[in-house]
Length: 128
Image 1 (cartoon, rainbow, N blue to C red):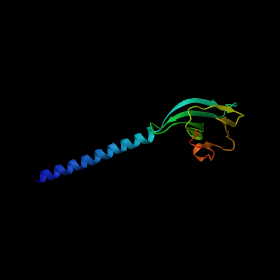
Image 2: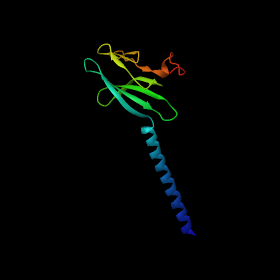
Image 3: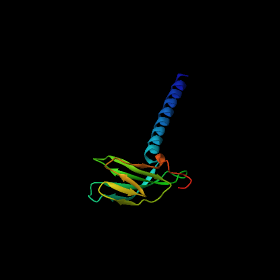
Image 4: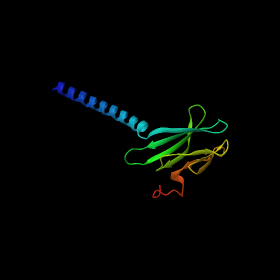
């Protein structure tokens, strides 16, 4: 009888450890691969000091496309300066070395300005 109790305990621990391991793998996959994005283009300021990488984002079957612009920072740091939803293209025109017009949104890098559709009071999901 002690053998059955020992085997049951071993099976229980094994099942628990395997379940935790698979949950960990699933969580890592969701965190790193859930929001797929592909690079569209890179826009560089006239003085070559600022680079903005533009990505087309796709959250899957339940969301629309979006565009994200990430400003290269020192080392490996990046800052999201442009985030728009229900759009699949971006046009970036530099006004000077630190001001860029992205899809008719003026962003001054010197002042630390950004654009995020979720914080724009004029953004209406019915028309985008």
